[in-house]
Amino acid sequence: MPIIPAVSRTSRSAPRGRRQVRLAADDLAQIVELALRATDPTARAVLAQIADRDGEGASEVITGILQRTSPRPLRPSSRPRASIATVERVAPAPATSLGEEQARRLAAVAGRLPQGGSVLFVGAEGTGKTLRARWMAHQRARAVTTIDLTKTRDVPLSHLVDAVASATASGMTVHLERAHSRDVEALAALVRARAAPGLLLLETTEAPVDLAVDAVVEVGAPDVAMIAALLRDHLGDVDERVIRVVAALRQGETPRAIEHAVEGARRFAAMTEIGVAEALHAATVQLIGSWPRRRRRDAAVALMQTTGLSQRAVRELTGVSRDTLRRHASSPGIGGGAGARASA
Image (cartoon, rainbow, N blue to C red):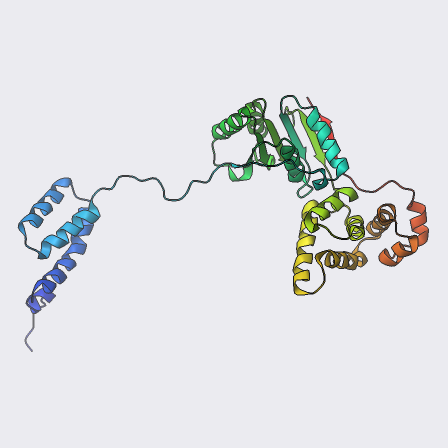
């Protein structure tokens, strides 16, 4: 059998017009294009001359190659750069958002601050540090700049210092969330950057040592009055007796836990015909059986002290005996709150 030498596609079939020429040129274009990316400018000039001399076929391909491989100026990334702060204008916050006692304590702290000053809120996660910080910020009725320090770890400290300095110099309030994500030296630099008459608010889970702020607010578990205030904010105009009962039973829970409970009640109410407050009351009462004895006792005592329910009604609701209720009925209300202390 005779051996037939291998021939290219263009050799086996003669070009039949412009389409065949472009097919052959496209095969070569891939190789040329790859080579062009690493060649010197003279090769590009030669190809440009060929394109000028040639007719329609290869010149179109060469022109396309030159366009695709031409050096392009560096462009900034199309990805939007994340802002290190959010700015908002706020109205004064009503005292009901915290409860009258908590609002009074924070107002006293704010009244002792010189020209705005700096305040550090210290407490465990979910205890209401942000709620208190924003309440104090809202009372000034000035614009608030919020910076989440966990989201700015890659931002140079000098940029954060400039942001704090410029915002507070204009009288704004700067709210630094999750300050525990930065070391003490960085926080000290941010505190020093504050300019009068601005207010600087920091919140952290642990008080940094030797951080020179004007006041420290220690945040503990909310008391019954504060929980009732939170429920009013979330539930609106509902039966006040339901508010008092749920607040007494939910004492010791964090504001975040209260919010989750309300959201759960909303979802349940959306699938039934009962209201959100009634759903929250029913869900709370249902949990009583799983509580430890001491928590049930504290809740029962709080019910008597804040709702005016009889010992019999409280016993039926919580299962706590009337003898236990009588022994603890005269005890002061159980539940923490936020204490404030000025520090040098």
